[in-house]
Length: 410
Image (cartoon, rainbow, N blue to C red; front, side, top):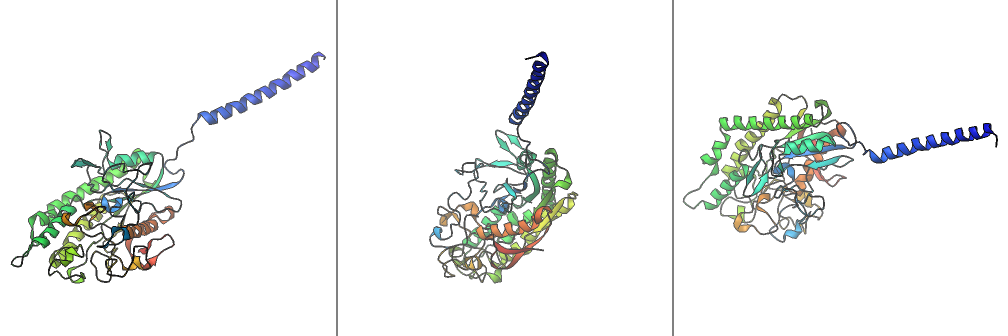
């Protein structure tokens, strides 16, 4: 082989070698560099829920009420509130983040439930259970929901953050307990009304309302801070503040008489007519106007509201026109017409009448049907990625194609 041929061959080999090295380098780079994480405006869109039991999905295991076997209304089973990666338990004991919670709207949108039953605006521990607030608490492995949101939003494309908070700041659970105790402890000679007790009415004083409004405003600002810390501008996401649905009817609309104890022993709705009227005329409107007032008063352009005050009227606990499964001739929650004839709030089961698998904290919360109804409204609020607010109400009977009660957001 002559010198010219040898030189040409060496040049050709060198070119092949250089090309091979480039390909190898590119391949190594692809292996060594992790895929770019999703984040603001990138990848699969997501919705996040933060707040208390009315958005965590408390009572979402049960589809209607019965005084017969609990299996007849057990829609989700014993794992209803499991939310760890192996579906073997709760990430935070007692938060009751239900699988039927509203945040899981589907349709190619991820859902993340950070809410916790019992939560207030600030984190606290009670009876050994941690309750994360809408704050940046970080101690001994516990985090506030705002900090959880910040972590999640940093590598997910969050479009909508939905908030339900304030009810526990007003001591909702203890108020219900007082009202039921007054009903059960009244005698032939003397009736006791929670609407006349200072331990109840003081919660709705102008001073306390103003304080709680400020606390809710602080919670909303913490959400905005968490999203900013995660790299979002206000135009990239929406904060949707929702208020609370009425769980019981006015006194004249109960299907059980207030005489005797049937209203509680059968219906699980032991309140006097006077107290039920007070709840709907004073308590609920005050709580809701405080939450909505905080949403408008916080001064953020990307905050909208979803009003739920009358969302489930006609399906409330002990409402006329619906009933326990056995009262309506329904064999189980799966029966035809079950969604139309059932109550959408859990019975109030007093300690003496409470038997597993029911839990006391599930009392008077939106159940499976209501949770799916809320999901329907939240889907409409998400609005294909351009979130909007509105008023959520029942819009007919039966279920939509997603198996949710037909609702309207208007």
